[in-house]
Image 1 (tube, rainbow, N blue to C red):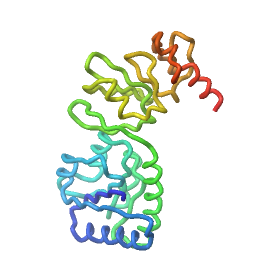
Image 2 (cartoon, one colour):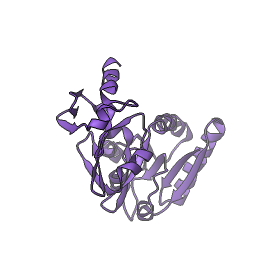
Image 3 (cartoon, one colour):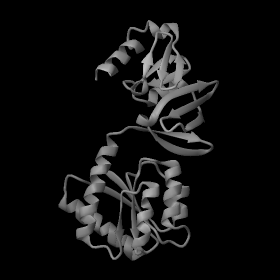
Image 4 (cartoon, rainbow, N blue to C red):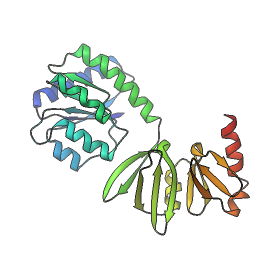
Length: 240
C-alpha cells in the first residue's frame, strides 16, 4: 500500500481529490493507497513523516503557501514525490525549483487527474525500488537515498554521511549501527573509520581507495578480507 498526503486548506477540493484517488484505485485494483489529509501546512511540516510516497500540495494556502512548504519538505526529503494543485497555472512552472513531478489546475477533472496520476504511480514504483535511510542532522530528520551516499565516516561517536552532491550530514551514532541499516552488498569497509559505497570507487592501489579526488586509507585486515576484498570489488565494477 502506498501512502499519500493531501495538504489542502479547502475541504471541498481536498475531498474531491481524495475521491479521485479512490476512483483510480477502483479502476486499477493492483494498486492501493492510504490517504491522509492536512488542512494546515504548518502542522504537516512540523510532524513530517518519511513514509509518504506522494504529497499533493495546494499552492495557495493562508498559513504557508505550497511552494514554501515544498522547499521545507525538500530540506528534509529529496525523494518524496511532490504534486502541486493550483488555481493559478502561471505559478506551477516554478515547481521545477523543488523537483515537483507535475501539477493540476483547479477545477480538477478526473480524466486529467488519472493521466497525470499514472506518471506519479510509475514514479512511486521506481522510488520504492530505491533504498533510503533517515538520519538526524542538526536536530532535524532527513532522508538520504543510499545511492547518493559516497561513503560514511566515523569520527569518535559521530557519523558523517558524504554524498555525491558534496554535502555532508553529521549525526550521532556508530559505524556498526550504520552497517546494519545499509545494503551490505553496496557498501564495504576499507578501515574501521570508513564505509564506502563501491559504485563510487574510481581506483584502488593497494594502500588507498579512491573516490574521485578523495582517497581513503585501506587497513591491512581489509586488504586480506577474503569475504569482500576491495580489489576484487573494483575489478567487478570495471568489468560491468
